[in-house]
Length: 182
Image (cartoon, rainbow, N blue to C red; front, side, top):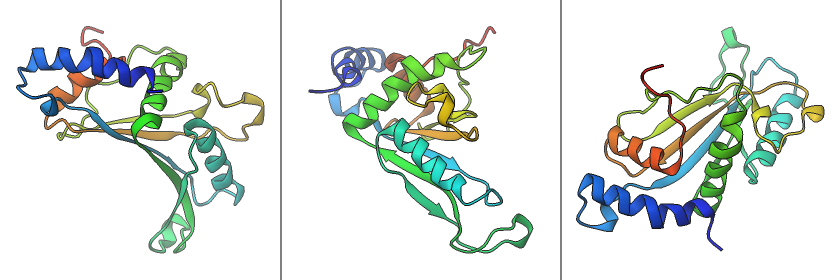
């Protein structure tokens, strides 16, 4: 069974974008290609910090994260070569739509004083990056079991050639962008 958001994309978003942007072919319509979730962990924290981040990210995304290791030693940051410094997950297809649905419908509205996300975080090539300062906004995380609050970066990669097209796609998919008047 296809995710709810994928069916919405096929039935509502694609026809709306074709009409608005005057695309001649369905394959010209921008779509989400992948979502990359990244958690960086300070190297100066204890050894269990990376394991806790991996466990939390596995609960949030439903996939086992890949542990990122440092490439070089940097004395000023107390960083050694091949030391674990974070973890990341790349989500595609059905899992991507499920995660995006949970992010938009459940997680983002749980942020305190939430008035929408910034429209200025596009990279110029149609990709959107979002920083979250606390992993507890996801309903899957139990507040009693976390030892430290951990932020994460979420990057939504689209096939849109421009930021305006990507913004139209994400707005129609339900992303709560902040209004300019506020």
